[in-house]
Every structure is written in structure tokens, then in C-alpha cells.
Amino acid sequence: MGPLAGVRIIEFAGIGPAPMASMLLADMGATVLRIDRVAESGLGVPVPQRYDFTRRSRATIGLDLKNPAAVEFALKLIDGSDALLEGFRPGVMERLGLGPDVCLRRNPRLAYGRVTGWGQQGPLAHAAGHDMNYIALTGALHAIGREGQKPTPPLNLVGDYGGGALYLVTGLLAAIIAARSTGVGQVVDAAMVDGALSLMTPIYAMAEAGRMGGPRGTNYLDSGAYFYEVYECSDGGLISIASIEAKFHAELLQRLEIDPAGMPAQHDRAGWPAWKEKLAAIFRTRTRDDWCSRLEGTDVCFAPVLSMQEAHAHPHNQARGAFIEVDGVRQPAPAPRFGTTTLDTPRAPGAVTPAEALAAWGVSEAELAALGHG
Image 1 (cartoon, rainbow, N blue to C red):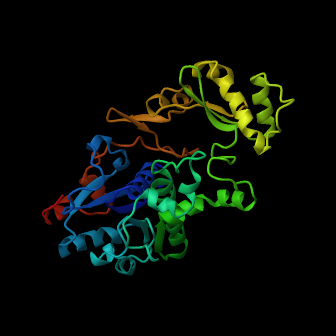
Image 2: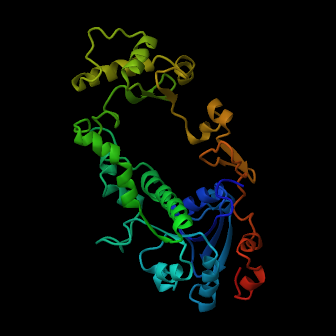
């Protein structure tokens, strides 16, 4: 079930963006089969299987890709696939005999997805790296943080998952659509450095327009503005205010019973410190829950700052079913939602058997067993 039902995808096991992209595709109904290289000693930071959420809803088989028979078995699966995705350094798939030239010659309609940090070409293409390194090169890391402090790494959301997984999924879906209309497949080169830079497009636009010209932490969206800031409450809880537009800003002042007369204009940057001090003093007079009762659901543009332990219990997340339980483990639900297409409930990592997945390719588990792996 799902809008991608019937789409078959081969995933070569990796870390970070590749399994995240595969999870998103599987959540939307694609049949994804993950191939682990049996010689691997481990990928990334190991976690128990039931908590490895990005491996949900698909089966995994192990292949010794140094064995020509195993490579041929993988190629047989690729022959019957709409897409392939891999997250190795440039040249690894070619050395395994599974590069795009080989695969597209056998399956001309294949969407061949490659996600790397630096891209398939360029001076850094073969260098090791992680999320923070990639976003450092784009200006994104430099822009995130408070005044007078070093940049704050935004978890690994901007490089791995935003610039990597989401752009890989977008590219693969575009390539699949193109192949269905033209019969011609192609390589999708999803570099995290490219994706993160693409995500920065509107921020670069603000900088070019002079609205992001100050040092880090002194601008509209980086905690410089008092109306786009996190404030502490009397109980130590935190709230977020994002009253950017004039009408929302006016409502904020009205609900806080602030007379703007005598205070600097909203967009007078010189006045921002005074405004921030005033708002900080007001928000420290009540608890987070009290402010929620007064401001949540209004046009102030307000939300409490919830921990990951708190987020599932918020009434809005509860009403939307934003969290689900899979094998008794709470985790984020699939996104986005579809108006007429029902999504299956994700299956726990390991719950989809190799036999189930292989059947979609018309391959028996006995053929896999004959290689000595499973």
C-alpha cells in the first residue's frame, strides 16, 4: 500500500542518509531490499535492531560481494528494479562490479541513486567526512549559533538527512518518473554538500538583500531578533516566539500587555537588545504551562520547547498521530500524509523476511541460500 506500491528498490547498506532515504521510500509503499556486505564488521554506531528505526519496513540479505556469484545475484535483482541507492565513497560500487555503467547497461530504465558527502567529482570527493564537515563548507554551520559563540552543530539534520536523504529521495523519484516516460534511466548524484547548500538558498537570498548581514546571532532568524527567540520561564521551561510579521508582532505585544510607545520600532536592530531584555523579564514571571494556556493556538506564533521525551504527549501531536508504536517501540510516524492513498503501518526492523522481499523480484530464497548467505 502507499503511492509507491509496486516500485522495487535495491539498497546497498550504509549509514546516515542512505538508510533514511530507504525508510522514507518504504514508508510510502516501495518494496525495498537492503543488501549488507557480509564482510562488514559494522556500520556506524551500533544499536539494537528494534531501535534502528531507519531500517524499518524492509528485509535485509547478506552477500559477499567479493564473490562473483554473489555479484551476479545482486545484478539479477537490479535487473528487476526501478531504482538502486548506495552511499559509498566514489568508486566503491565500480570496484565491486556494480557501478552505474554495468547496471544501466543491463537495466536501461534504472534510477541509480548515489549519496555522498562531497559528490562524485571534485577535489574532496574521496576524502572522509561527516555531516558537520559538509555543512561547514556551505556556510550553513557558520550561520547557526548565538552572538559571540562558536557555531552550534544542528545535530546531523542539515547534511545527512536534509541535504542528503531528502535530496536523494527527490532525485530518485524524479528519475523514476522520467524513466517511465522516456525509458531511459540515469545516475542521481546526491551530494550532501550540494543539498545543504540548496537548503541555504533563501538564506543566501536574505544575505544578498542585506537582511542577513550581521555577525552570527545578530540577525532575524539566528536569535538576534527579540521576536524570533527562545525564552526561559519561571520554572526553567522554555518557549519559542516567532512573531515576525507586523500583525503577529502586534498580537504578541497586545497579549503581553506591552505598550510599544517609547520602545524602538520592531525592525530597528539597535533596539533589539532592549526589547529582548524586556520580554525575557516578562516570560520569567510565569511557568511554561501558564504561557501555553495564554498563548498557544493564537497568532502570536508560539510553541513550547519540548524535549524528545515530552513531544509525543503534546495534544497536537497526539491528535495527528505523529508518533506510532512499532513492535512496542514509540517512533515518529511516516510523513508526508496522502489524501487518498493509505500507508501501511511500518513494520519493525527485521520483521520483513528475505523470502517476502525476494518474491517481489521473482527470486527464491533457495537461490540466495545456494550462495551460502542469507
